[in-house]
Image (cartoon, rainbow, N blue to C red; front, side, top):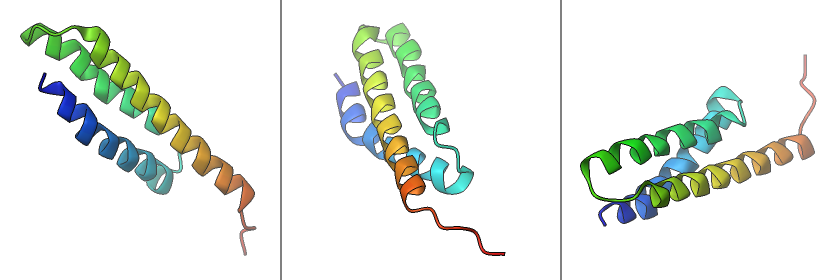
Length: 89
């Protein structure tokens, strides 16, 4: 079960970094959950081909981290709406 450390160490860090990067760099809130979903689901397709593991567990982790990324994006969006400052000319 080598995929468990990947989803416990690498995926949370990747989720936070991509969520913050998409907000700060691209100013797109819902792009981060889509990127996380596609990146983590590449493993859902590739890993069961080479190893005898089920795809359901890997897909469940991908959905979980997509929801976490969505929550981070919504929190940052609500802070932007609450603490937005008018642009000066």
